[in-house]
Amino acid sequence: MAHLEQDFHAIGSMPLVTLDEMQAVELMNRIDTKFITDISVLDSILDDAYSAGYKVCEITGHRLLRYTSIYYDTDDLEMFRRHRNGKKTRQKIRVRSYHINGENYLEIKNKQNTGRTRKRRIRITDDLKMDFSKSKEAAAFIDNHSKYGRAELTPETSTDFQRITLTNKAMSERITIDIDLNFTNYRNGILADIGKLVIIEVKQDSRNISRMKAILLKHRVFPYRVSKYCLSVIMTEHDIHPGRYKEKLRHIHKITEQR
Image (cartoon, rainbow, N blue to C red; front, top):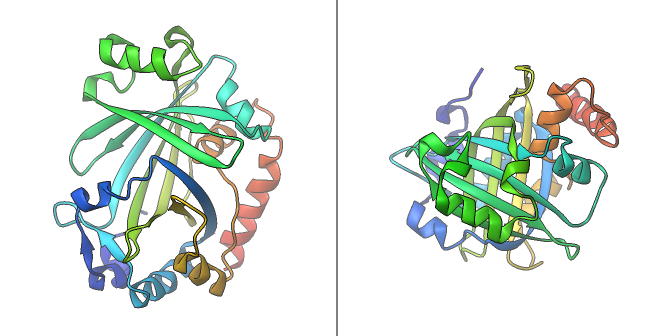
């Protein structure tokens, strides 16, 4: 069952940051640290974030926003396999859709062996989400910035989720909190979800001290590397070897069942 904004009372009391202000903290070249926990802990985390002065992003009166990511990959799922196998340098190609305003972006994310993530993106129209090759601009974007050719790429899975986005007073970090994760596999039509899982990501331009990391540690929420794309494949492609994600799924189950 999808959550409502009133389920998390702290975000109703937080000072606001607009979308335009938030874009100043977009951090297209950044250091990401992910954390996972159970939905039952989230309200307490948000209470502490409010006390620490964090602001919440609001768009057209909404603070809990729905997103969909459509992930592209090769026929042999090379991007998934590189991530599953722990390769330090890897690429991810997706279309990110913002349901609140109908905007769609074709994005290329490059993970570097330094631990930094660099993201590039261009806006596309709704009719290009499942086949961006019809756009000259999108095709040129892929040709110029992706290691994969356009003809190699097809939509593989999608992840639908709700997100709360926070920023600190100094606007030097951005926090994304993803809940209500649902997966769709375009190859076989299989659906899956991890309803109680919360994925929190702290995005910074440097390794400065983060109040949010201290809040998470207080609630015994620890850094944990996990990919929504990899989860979507593992949970819907029953013939694929999960590799290290088999243990990750066990860990997720343990966290969400014990809280």
